[in-house]
Image (cartoon, rainbow, N blue to C red; front, side):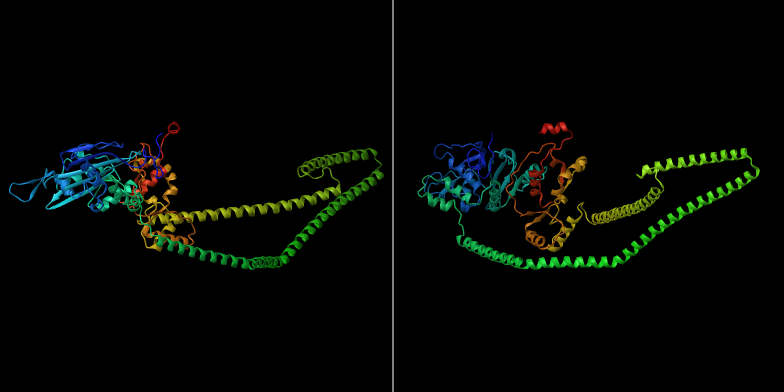
Length: 599
């Protein structure tokens, strides 16, 4: 299994970038054609006879890796004492000796090339992650000045393929730019007019801490005898540390911490001393609240007693009406009975007068029939009453007293049920009113959101958008300088079927703000010093290109990152692509079978 490279891995098999191949054209005595040293990332031995060009190739690699002339010394590995006889100009012209003309006191330098020539140095490096970094330098004369053009590519270049067509007007640079940078959002090849920018870019790509690594490489190229290891390490490998400044900084920080601790202890003591006052204040507030409640109950009690008196009077009135109806029924019954007795008296009087026994018997039978009908009628009413009494759980087949009690109970339960129904209707009305208020509030919020979206060019609304506007006003920045990530990316039109799923995945990420370094301190002070009444997440953008861990990555065909596009002329494009690749490099599949296949 291949080991994962990281900054703590010191294994020589996998750590860092390694030289893949070195190519030179018109450099020193390597003339007119491309010479290649193909190491393929392995340890290599460069051997040959004297003056065969070993130091020339080493100096070519040294020229590529140490761009500043003051940090570079040629021909160190030869071991000769005089090391200043080789320069960039001597390598450019291909000096190979001196010739003294007959009769002349001076000598003439023998050269392979003139000022019309071109010289190209190229070295390609790669690591275990298949990341490629190609360094190249092109030298040519304009007038009496030797011009040097520096370049770095993230693709494996070759002199024969990429530098064979060379012209003085710079069309070859346009051809390389069009070839490697046109079809990709990230530039794969960069040109530098000076060694400083070239060296800084190279240090960043190779993960070097500082340019000490370049001077160290220049020193160890020609090391044959090492007298004092401590002095060598101290001079060439260690960087000076301002100990006095560090001590003063630590001292100031310690004093600040001690002052902060003293202030915290002081505040804690103040809080502890104020705690009883706070407790008493809460108790006093509770007493005031209780007094207010009692005052309110006192003002209400008169109305309560009046309402209670009315209820009792109504109950007594109902009882009296019931007794009245009972007495009226008894009175009616007595009147009927009186009438019957009077009829009986009249009949008996007539019977006595006429003494007709048969007539009396027929009248008795008639009376019996009437009594039977009355009995059946009352029996049917009694059965109906028993059914109703059973339904409401009252005593069945009651006597007169129980009947009156049942009637009073039924009336009371009817009144209670009516009160309960009225309360339920009031509660339902209150709940309906609350729902109506919530709907009105929601409608108002939606209208405010629609108005905000009509006034702005993005789909980000709500409190988070208002917080961003407040921050922009506070720090004096524009929306382009402090954008939402969601304003920098969008789903491609041809991928609209995936828009809902992608927006759900990137929702929280899209609501983050990108804050450049020049506004970061002001934004921090504003956020920490104000009640935002909401939540905002923002990312710090320091403005310097970091070590790109995912350079030259190959995206899958179904990758989510292929379905989004970025805002044109975006200041944060490289940083945004790295974050998306690190956090959201998901595959988009259309079926569960494809999903199981990915797992």
